[in-house]
Length: 195
Image 1 (cartoon, helix red, strand yellow):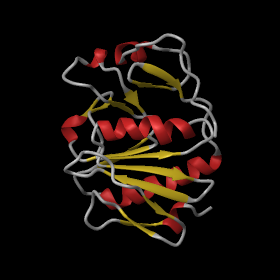
Image 2 (cartoon, rainbow, N blue to C red; image 1 turned 90 degrees about the horizontal axis):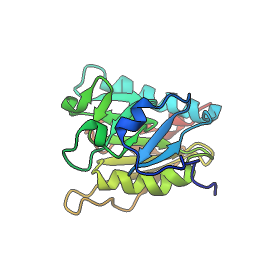
Image 3 (cartoon, rainbow, N blue to C red; image 1 turned 60 degrees about the vertical axis):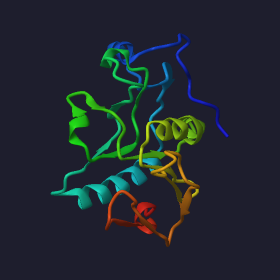
Image 4 (cartoon, one colour; image 1 turned 180 degrees about the horizontal axis):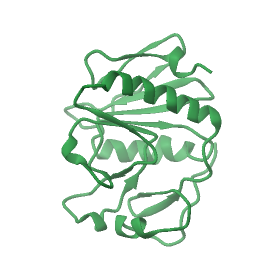
């Protein structure tokens, strides 16, 4: 398993720092720690990304919720701190947001309803550990980890009572994935992983 992506050597960054960086790299901040998002993902990552975005975009046409794809800044405050003091800003590969009051010119502030991370060699460990914990802590209702090489999707759904993720459900080609945050959206895994 690949290690965590390269980190900036300094520690305790905020969105105010992040927003000023101009080094032609993509970064994420998680609890003040900066993670390098480069290099660009492989072609299969992008193909799966576009297939999933298309599924959500088609379904959400003329509905209240919206879908966005990376790069798109999601600021996750710990409380009511000012934007410049927010210690976490991530760029999920795909996100769905239904509360439009969270959207602003720079992206969004607050947890999306659904976040999707598509695994790559560079982000594998972070997506499966650090981001899983982060999204659970910020009460993202549904978190998908998509494995383009293994052709499967692990779906974590937030338990309304405990505010913890339930045991993940795993879907493979031939399966239908019922999107938990919507009443009538089902995605065919064959469509997600088609070449």
